[in-house]
Length: 113
Image (tube, rainbow, N blue to C red; front, top):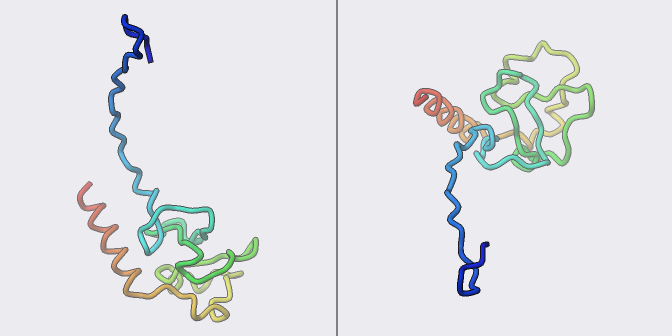
């Protein structure tokens, strides 16, 4: 603020800056923002990449040295050793319909580019 001649503060105009939103800020099958409680799919080319632990009903990520693949990538990586014990968390699998919907949204976004 600058002081005007009569002793009142003069407001400075601050231009608004439009920022392009990085599409990687949203993630997971829920399409919500990233948080600290997330797990990365071990497939480096995964279309979603990061999942909220709560969305896949996991309390914590896999132990170090253990790969976790999302439900989309898992069928294509069954040969990879040291994978997370998915059967242990059977109830924690992402619902297929939600994942497919998110994949379709990502595909449409890429087509627009």
